[in-house]
Length: 196
Image 1 (cartoon, rainbow, N blue to C red):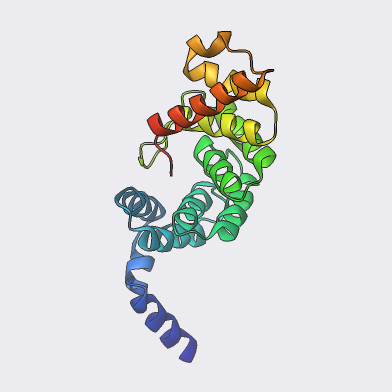
Image 2: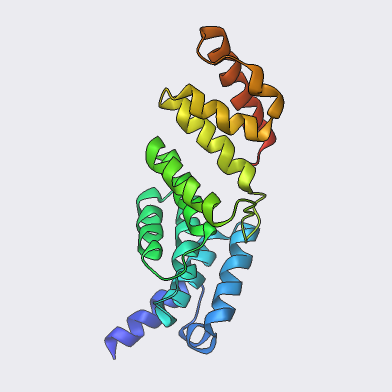
């Protein structure tokens, strides 16, 4: 009895009643979480995605939503953990790997970030984030270019830039001047891309 009262108090503090959680279907919770994520209500999105995961723990989508919500709330460790958990579930999609890539980039794990961005692009080369935020495959290519540059892999960085700006193909990044141009182009591309 005390446990149920504590649960009800906790849920009402968080803005979601026990009845709301029990009455909403998995799809309704996923849709609510997505809508909240799109509108910037990240704490509410986190609650909805968590409730969806609790209802259907074998699906990857709630873990992806939890990861993105935690990322937007600056909880990088929790975000990475949720993305990792979701990746172990069948059919994990590009949204999950893209989010994981952004989290690892924020944590300066540049090689890990590129691996996850590549996984997202391998799943969907024209990726656009399901819940808006203006994110697309271009953002992943910019992030990969930035990561490779940070790792000192200038040729690989250039490859990503050329995907976004084919005119950059003639720049020689084996020289200091070429690397300076590459750094400038990455900054330009970051300005053009929607970064989170």
